[in-house]
Amino acid sequence: MPNTETIVPHEITLLVEQKKFPEVEDQWIRLMETEPVELPVFFAIAASAKKKGNPVGAVGWLRLLADDRIRRGDAEGRLRVLEEIARMAPTDEAIRGELDAALKQRFAGHPALAAVLAKNPIVGATDPAGAAGRVERWLRFRPGDIYHLPGRGPGRIVEMN
Image (tube, rainbow, N blue to C red; front, side, top):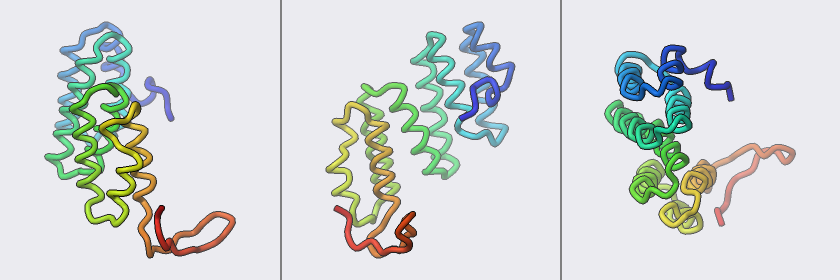
């Protein structure tokens, strides 16, 4: 992963270093509204702000970004943002519920959804972002589909247990 100096605009880095968080928020909103910016840029800005003493602001900005992704119809992007919030604030009960609901919405209709969520509950996890990552890794696969297994060749998934 590139370091934050290479992906975060220089003017925002300076504002974070100077702890001018209202100005950082203005720049955050400008980036959301005017430019197609990749999510890691936002995550790096939020992480820098948290490190400089503004964890509540960083999580709030990420919540704005999650709402923006829904407005744009980007459910996958919203899920990435919710996972980042869960990494920054793992004890936040609200984010656990939102992340759980987003996973259920994203993978609705998957035959193994209930079983995978039962094995990896988001709401009770000590690391909700990690649990969400495990759920996503499992649910990338569907019974009946054919996948290439390195060293073994193609194979069909018969069941997920």
